[in-house]
Image 1 (cartoon, rainbow, N blue to C red):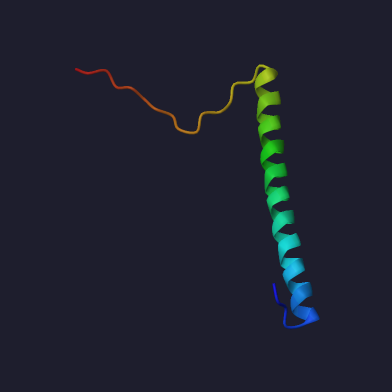
Image 2: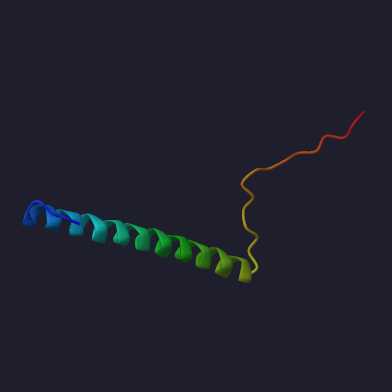
Length: 59
């Protein structure tokens, strides 16, 4: 790549590092939430359903 200035080079490097950091934070939070859900189900707690369905008997 051909950079016009040192400032542009630093900005590009910062942008790449920032994007990688955001990706790692997202993966870390996702893994942490999944680990918490697994530990809750191991304790015997039922996971809360997101959608409750009711079945109506047909007349």
